[in-house]
Amino acid sequence: GAVVSQHPSRVICKSGTSVKIECRSLDFQATTMFWYRQFPKQSLMLMATSNEGSKATYEQGVEKDKFLINHASLTLSTLTVTSAHPEDSSFYICSASPGTGYTDTQYFGPGTRLTVL
Amino acid sequence: LAKTTQPISMDSYEGQEVNITCSHNNIATNDYITWYQQFPSQGPRFIIQGYKTKVTNEVASLFIPADRKSSTLSLPRVSLSDTAVYYCLVGGTDKLIFGTGTRLQVFP
Image (cartoon, rainbow over all chains, first blue to last red; front, top):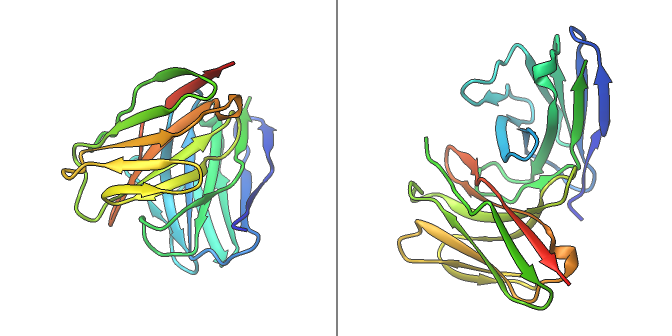
């Protein structure tokens, strides 16, 4: 149980375009979903936290107008990278939790590798 | 900003016990410690979580001293498939901070 999927697994786009990444909890209801970014050989950095039906909470330094997050249902959250640039190229990973707090177990998706040309 | 640090890498041989430490000097009262395993180009996989003292499950043990400023993940008998990057995560009321990660290489 506790499976989280992401789509697409890999995307290549031109600079200036927007890319949407979907995160789904397949067998449980995700009250909270998290979005992370991971650069090569580095740790995961939390970008934002979203609760179903509420606006996402962004970490310091993350532009909310550039990284749009929607958590419309208890099983789906989307991250849209708007006007992507090469420096946005990274591995984006979502996680989902049935709980509401940062101490609850997170179940991670397989990640999406974004390459911006 | 709180820092959570780990050794960059560790080497081991199959069948040996491996202990990976994580330093989290600024841990808060409400923070829990969770350890994850990550293979290349995959999302992290949950290993174990604890708050204090010792926690054991079917794959690992987690040791947390009384001051909680560090934690140690213990993998009892590693195999080649345990070669991966291991992260500690300190999470509480208002933060989620992943450690710097430890790359474990297991040799035959």
